[in-house]
Structure formats: C-alpha cells, structure tokens
Amino acid sequence: MTAVRSESPELLASPSSLAFPPGFVWGAASAAYQVEGAADEDGRTPSIWDTFSHTPGRVVNGDTGDIATDHYHRFRDDVRLMRDLNLGSYRFSVSWSRVQPTGRGPAVQRGLDFYRKLVDELLDKGITPFATLYHWDLPQDLEDIGGWTVRETSDRFADYAEMVAEALGDRVPYWTTLNEPWCSAFLGYGSGVHAPGRTAPESALKAAHHLNLAHGRAIGVLRSVLPANARTSITLNLHQVRARTDSAADLDAARRIDAVGNRIFLGPLLGDGYPADLLADTAHVVDWGALVKDGDLAETSRPVDMLGVNYYTPTLVSDGRPGEQGPRHHAHGKSAYSPWPGSEHVAFHLPPGQTTAMQWAVDASGLYDLLTRMHREHPNLPLMVTENGAAYEDYVSPDGTVNDPRRIAYVHSHLTAVHRAIQDGADVRGYFLWSLMDNFEWAYGYSKRFGAVYVDFATQRRVPKRSAHWYASVARANVLPDLPKEDGGF
Ligand code: IFM
Image (cartoon, rainbow, N blue to C red):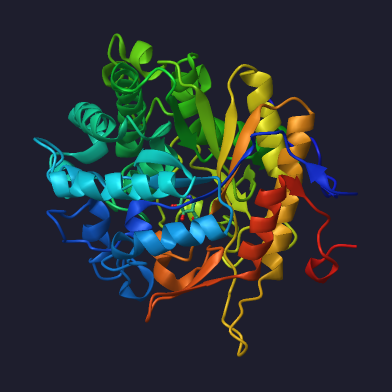
C-alpha cells in the first residue's frame, strides 16, 4: 500500500456561496460525560472516566465531569438554545452507568427517563435525535473484570444496547454504536492518556477487537429491536495519514499508521477482515489467532446504514530514529509507550501552518481526502461528518459577546471541503459541529473550549459565540456563504 497523501493540497478556497443538497443535516454534537454532570444522581455509578478524572495527575487542573455543563438539569434550556441556533439534529451519547449502573442486570428507570425526556424535548422543538450508545464511559464495574480487554464486555454491551433501544427505539431515528473506538483502545489501554489509563500495547489490540465485536453484536440487537426505518452506524476518528517525504521508509511509516489507526476498524467492520499487513506488523504484540475466534468477523461486519467520520487534523509521520519523535497531538499520547503497536519506530510531526488551541494543524484538505477515500473504497456507504470543530482561547468581551473569527474560518474551510467531496461523488448526508457548547475536554479538563456556545463554568451561563450565530445562519439557508471579510475572507 502507498501512503495516503493529500489529493488536494491547495487551500480549499470558496469562490462563492455553496449550496448543500436538500435534506443535508446540520447538527451539533456532545457526549454524556463531557456535558451531563449529575455524576452520582438517580442511581448513576462511576464510569472509568469518573475514576480516572478523580485520580490525581490524570486531568489538567484536577478537573472532573462531576458537574460539567450541568446539562442533566439544564437540558430543556439547552434544547431551546439548539432550536434558536436552527440545529436540525443533536448528537448526544447515553451514559451506560446511568442506565445500567454495574454494566449488567436490569435498567434503572430514572436513568432511561432522562434520555426519554431529552429526546422528547428535542422532538418537540423539531430537532432530530442522533444517539450514540458509547462515548468512552465504561461502567467501572466492567473495567474491574478487565474492561475492553475481555470478550465479556462485548456481550455486556449488546445487552445494554438492547435495553436502550427498547426504551428509545420508537423515537430516535439515528443510532451509533461506538464513538471513536480507536481512542478507547489506544488512548485508554495503549498510551494511557485516557481512562482507564492502562499502558500495554497487547491490551490496546485486544480492546480494539472486542470493541469491533461489541459493535457488531450491538448492530445485530439494534436491527432486531429498532423499527425498519431506523439508521445504524459507527463513528470512527479516521486518521488522514501523510508521509513527510516520499522515501520508502516514510511511506512505510504512513502505511503502518493507516493500518493501526484506520484499517484495524474499517477492515473488520466493513467486511474485509483484519488487514494482513496489520497482522504481520503486530504479530509480536498479540496472538491474533487466539484473539479472533471463528465467527467473530461475521459478527463485526454486520451491515451498517452509514459511517460516521470525525476529523480535526491530519497526521504527519516519518520513519523515526530513536529520540527523534517530533511534536505530537493528543491522539498520539504523551507516554513513552507507543499507543501504536507495530509502528513503534514511527515519528509524528506537527504539520506546518496554523494550529488550534490543541496544537492541531488546521488543514481542511484532510477532510476532503478522507471523505473521498471512503467513497472510493465503499461507494454505497452513506457518510456523515459526526464531529468537526476547533478549540480556541475564547473569552467574553466587556460588551458581553464572544468573538471567535478563527472558529468561523475553521468551520468554513471544512464545510467547503465537505461540499467539494459531495460534488466529487461522496454521499455525505450531514455535518455535526463539535461541540454544541464548551465542555469537559477529557484529559484537558475545562482548559480547552470547543463549543459554539461559551459556558461560564462558575455560573453555568451560556453565551452563544459569534460562530454559533454564523453557523445558525448557514444551517437555516443550507448554503455556505463566502467567508466574511473580518474572518479572513476576501
Ligand atoms: O471532545 C472530543 C470528543 O469527545 C471526541 N472527539 C474529539 C473531541 C475533541 O477532542
């Protein structure tokens, strides 16, 4: 395989307004642990993120999701805000330990009731609910029996999926099994920068397989419980991998990262199995023959109706000599352990150009390349951009407004990329901004603001940023206008 290189390295410039296809979904996304708070209310028990965030040294400033944006209590106001911002859809996740505290046994009605009320409120305001079953918050009790490194967790996930689908299936049309299983496996069990904070390459690979299995089993359950017109999917944070040079060694580095970052999920999920090169690259780390049982791949590849793609920044790699690892973004972790088994000698580099507050390079061509690649490789699979957005150092001005021109420019360039991918044949059905509002940014706590809506965490006051008003006007028109001059347009 050759490295994935940009097919559109030039700036994705927008010469004039861009109309999106009729019915294109304009949404915003969030995740339970990042927004809900109410960590120990109504029967909820700790997830791995509660444990992790309460462990000193794991999260910046010792921040936790105990209160977060208090969405659990303020969801009605938040949904009103969504309506005021013309959102067509809201992507949220269900907290497993809120609806099934120990990860097994009967559901807790009060937990399910919260999501029913949220969904009803959304429907009442004309906003389509888009539910994700798992956005990283495994019940701690399941971690205590091995978490994603053991097969049993896949069975438990299928049971949990069934109970949520039975409770909400009559009113939620879009279902996603897992959000970014790569992060769960490789940041959670490889680099340890995410919960549960384990650092063992073998565990990361086992987790990846059990997440694939959990997804497939959940799809089977969802299909048997949900109405025929419900749409199922999984969301992947696909890595747009680029080699720093055309040397054989750098191209091989890119191939390895594409294998362990992308094809380790795409293969088993979409019917091609685990790629031979991945199996060879990681044979010294895990016994794949023992890990993948007969029949597993038939389960992992149960058909989905759509693929969710999350994209923020490209990944620039080279063949690295010891000690030469360049700047990394969070997805690559901070520990000395490589979260990328089978690519231990690969170096990550910060691509040139502007960066966001996460020190992630701004490069919308990566989104175009990903969408068109997915379309080329799986032409009949509809795509949805389930996350895209940027953190900047936002603040409330003395006049009470939050002016965030760089977020507008970021989103503008990425929407331009989406539009161009659609024009070039990709079947992209919608776009979800990450995130609706500032929230708990995992290991960065509240220090990074991704929201279209500013949150004052001391008072929980919400202030829509200028980007929120701008995005609302794009959503209303279903047209991306030229970038305003004050935001960097011409
Ligand atoms: O905040 C996260 C989200 O939970 C998953 N995708 C990336 C976002 C920004 O880091």
